[in-house]
Length: 243
Image (cartoon, rainbow, N blue to C red; front, side):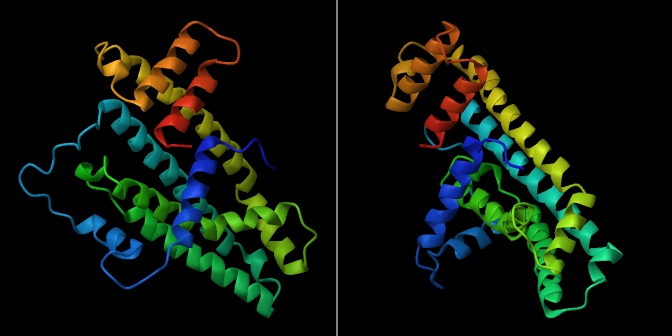
């Protein structure tokens, strides 16, 4: 079952595709080396200050995006573990089934590692934030491939996996993800409403992004057609993540 694709999913998939297309090397500039440094950064004096242009609104929506992705990882990790603990998935002993079970075990390991990654507060406003989120979403690809099991005629092994996924909460998980996606859009609006009250007239015009957000805000507060709270939240998401 698919609902409309959320802006969050579109954004993260685009970023994953971008990173996947980059050359992978063993140099210190590679994505892997940057991500490996995330949990070992020790800021020196003055580095805890947020980067120029960073604000409470941006910080709040970035933190909540991390919470959203962590929710996906937590839920899918548990579903995968429940499927692996279900005796029914071992009723077929074949090479295909062993491969599927092996991929599920790998996902349990990868998703746990991704969940354990913590982004230092001083990195929240940097480009490392995007790599951090991408790293978590890449781990989810190991589970999201299973969504296609719902729409295809399957060999017995894959049908068995699909039945176990449904039994252990797959459908309920996707309903909750869609709900949280909508909640995230509304959360952005609530945070922006508080943030905009702190801005001077000059700050509201400081750059193109701010001007675009204020234009959308004015349309929302004037109840212009097609700009309800959800639509405004989606527009804020587009502007902040450059969609």
